[in-house]
Image 1 (spheres, rainbow, N blue to C red):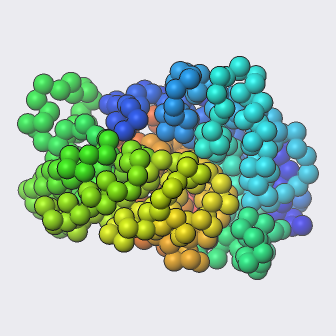
Image 2: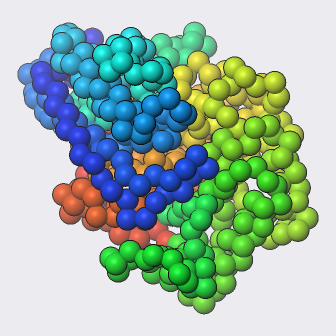
Image 3: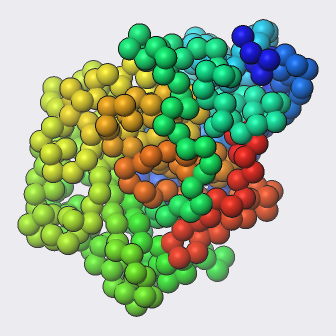
Length: 451
């Protein structure tokens, strides 16, 4: 029990649709609009200090709730319903807890809430737990923020024994007794972060590719070479579709070639860096192994530039009759969509995964525990996007800046797809939204609460 423990007084959630300036093309289809959830949590600690914490996230149903049987509107509505029910659970819970305990409370309530939401909406299919984590994430963030603000402190200085009531054994098992989420975190954020730019499955690379294409009339770059000229970016995340090894290898080669040429024209000194995100399109690792071997043979420069592959195979680990060891011997293969429960971490090495993609859309509490596990076991660590904007982007930049990551790039694709959303956050944190020489600055992170 600590004086900094908080009780929840009030929870408010608002939802607004945000159109994308251009579609984000995934292997599962295009994202043209997302529902943004903004949450405020008013809390009071044992000393009587009160604060309002905030959190936000896009309820990306195409990513978190794929499949047939319901429309996109129904799925987004189900995630909204789950968020509202979780908000009521928080408001009615009573008692004082630290931020990690409140995060665990939300996680423990989640499965029941998802079942209730499905029944209330007469949804013909269950709501995936990953969709529930996304719905929960802004609430979890707002609780952490209120906890730190009420204490007048940076949350990252509070993730230890002095302010937490339970260690990581509560999340990860008895071997973690005496270990805390703050172990291995930096006290202050790194000053700069290299921006990782998304190249969608159908994005134009050059002016020639853009011929005949509809270009948004907003003054922003459209082709990859235009983005490089405008922002001097050098780190790219390539979205692929299908699992044709030859086709994907050629796309990686073409992206790398176009990026190197554009960077050379602009005098960008840093080498082009790549990652690949198939979004689960490979039914089996064999075509991934073929792809990597083909790339190494046919485009060795692009192969050397490729740093990791993110979630190439389907998210349902219970259906795996294979491992990823052969592929991960060629390049690191990191888990993303499959990691919807912390219990799955123990199986990572046995299944051949190289590491984890941390995303604040799964929650601050989840991310801190997953990072601690990955760091102890020497796993590959990245911080990834879910087209984060508003406070979700600020939260994610701050998380990235506190971690020892394996790939020192920060995915920031909301500037490509929803660059005009949440203007109040852009005005308050201008350095986090301004890309210069391929990087953003963390100068505007205030160091109170979560942000």
